[in-house]
Each structure stands twice: as C-alpha cells, then as structure tokens.
Amino acid sequence: MRKKGLFAAAAAFAASPQGQRLMRQAKDYVQSPEGRAKLAQLKDQLAQRKGGTTTRTPARPDTTPH
Image (cartoon, rainbow, N blue to C red; front, side, top):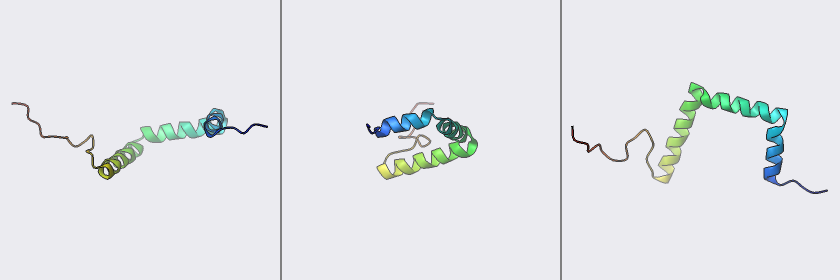
C-alpha cells in the first residue's frame, strides 16, 4: 500500500463533500465585510513585520503637479 503525499491528501479532501463545504464557508467569509477587514488587518501586520508598506498607505509622497 502506497502512502499519499501531503498535497495528494489535501486534494482528496478538497474533492470530498466536507472539503467542498469548508471551501464554500471560507469563500463566503473572505467575501464578507468581517472577512475583508480581518484580511486587511493581517496584511498590515505582515507588512509591518517585514518592514514594508501596506497597500492603503502610499509608499512615497504624491509628487504630481496640481
């Protein structure tokens, strides 16, 4: 009997009814206002750890002539 690799096991779970339900729930959460706020918060935290900037904060001042 051959063991499945981690990726194969994850793909098999994703194809199962339980995996389909879990992916649908995750998609619904990400598209909700609460999910979007949480993702933005996590993105900001990750950018701070790496010393980068967030997408909501300009990387440099606006220098376009008015």
